[in-house]
Length: 64
Image (cartoon, rainbow, N blue to C red):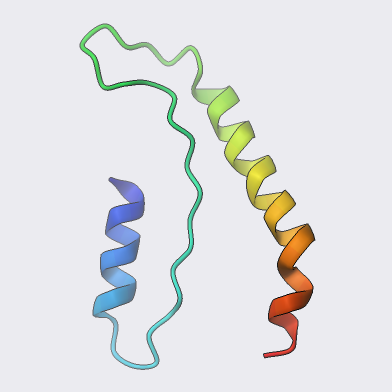
């Protein structure tokens, strides 16, 4: 839901509209018995995925 809000905000901004990009790991399936046991690991996975993406593709964006 957090990323959806970010995407809607980016879409509804006045020009120039920002490009929205986000990565989020799923750490539960929204069941009534969920716990926060895997939340830290999920955050770590998202962070590493974003770092890998930036390391691999950052040069492609630096040219404008």
